[in-house]
Image 1 (tube, rainbow, N blue to C red):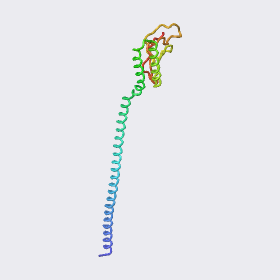
Image 2: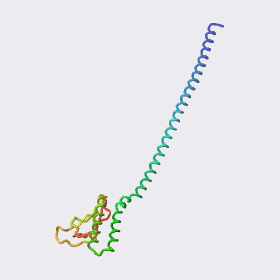
Image 3: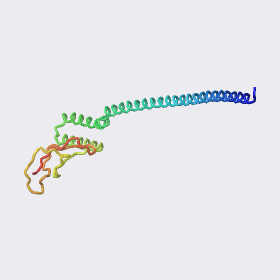
Image 4: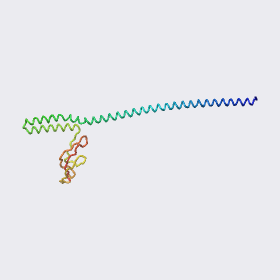
Length: 187
């Protein structure tokens, strides 16, 4: 063989060897890339599972909170009047005593005074709980608090639009009207 042939053959072998190396490197690079992608995919799947678990726990926690608040609200509504009724029990006792004593007594004034004492005590207790009486005689007519049941002629210009008589007092609880006062208004 000639030197040129040897050189060509050596170059071809080097070329084949380089190609084989490149192919092996490509295979290794592809394997490394596949391993890297698989690792990233596994990490992403783990993160998804973690987030799904966290989401499900949050949904369950919120659902439990919602159920608990509904139950507490129902319980509050059910027992809301218990405090007021407990406050009224002494008045029932007082009225029962007044009724029992009225059968034995002929003194009408004593019975009247006893009922007035019970009434004043009751109103004082209800006022402490936030009840306010609306007695609007002499005030300017206000549809937020008054219900006009009659319009009467005004005796003078100053009394026009004012309440001149109240047939039924109104009541409000902490600025919320429970019952409007029924009034006669001057026009």
